Amino acid sequence: MTTSGAPRRVDSHFLDGQVARVIDGATQVPAFASRLERAGLLPADLRTTASLAALPIQTKDDVLEAQRVNPPFGGLLDTNAEVVRIFQSPGPLYEPQLAGPDPWRWAPSLQAAGFGPTDTVLNCFGYHLSPAGIMFDEACRALGSQVVPGGIGSVDLQAQAISSLPLTAYTGLPSYLKSLIDQFVSLGLDRSSWTMSRAVVTAEPLPETLRHELNAFVPTVLMAYGTAETGLLGYEESPGTGLIVPDDVLVEVCDLTTGEPISDGEGQIVVTLFRPEYPLIRFGTGDISAWLHGSDGRPRLAGVLGRVGQAIKVRGMFLHPAQATRTIGAVTGVSQFRIVVDRTEHRDSLRCEVVIGDNHVVDQVVADVRDRIRQGLRFACEVHAVDLLPQSAGVIVDNRDWT
Image 1 (tube, helix red, strand yellow):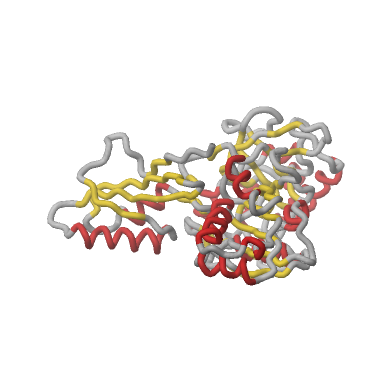
Image 2 (cartoon, rainbow, N blue to C red):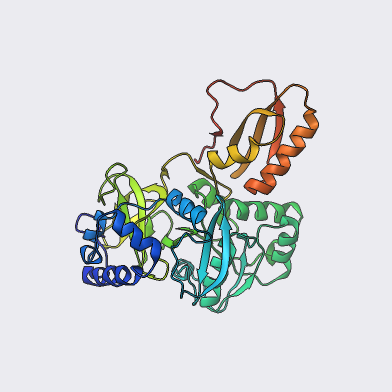
């Protein structure tokens, strides 16, 4: 990636040229020009992948604050950029979809699993406000595949669709594919009507135990990795061999303290996109990974090994302690609360435990909290009134076991 990073198949001069091009174009974007000035840098200082380390990492919190001050995109978008859709992720963080085919570049991950023009794909990522559904919809269309926009809907209806339609492939959460398989079996549908043979899954871990269960119905299940802001950052060509980094993006694993790119050990995944009209340059994803040094020379990520900070990913979406506090703590009658995340049968579950103040109607407060979680955090969540919480209880308690 850089002189100290993992090896890349593409020529380093190509990457250096892309860096110089995106830096020159990005100087027309107000927020990036200000960022350079704050760092005491000139465009001439950033001409190679190695020189980018002089620019401090831009965090998701930085983008959120910029959007708060200068909505909707925080001055990070060129005024001449063609935006065809606007999405909202938890935060809230607004993400533009720029014009052009497969703008998030997910098609290579689908091709690696064998997707193509003869496929009909059940896309079970959310289409409502979240960009994930459209991300994979666009990637499928770029490959000529038909798409059934299942979204995150009724598993009953989708199981019936699997039985009735000539579906060949799936995109979505691995846990949701497991739910569809379970429902298909529960409804007693004809096993011979199941025609999906390949899947690309992302947004949550894929333990080998779960992959093995899925393979009983879907022979090819491959993992991919990316973010709402940056699109595809890595994908499997075969199970368990690490995530290949595509050639059209610069991915670095950076030291958690210094921000310098590293070739060994764990660090934050830091991304530079080669789109000057939306210059995410040295953008910190908040995900922790490490390089796998394979024999073929292609850089591979070890997957997501953890998170920087306190946010966690639940059912494919981020859950932030500060956002939970703003949403639930503002409900009248709530004295204390915590959200407990568990995982049963490869499916995330959420439970909110609430201590309710005196002189408040318990059932009403519980109902109010449930509604606020659904509207403000966009999760379905059980809510239980409790007398007290452990003294060490944090806002979010993650009890999941990914084995």
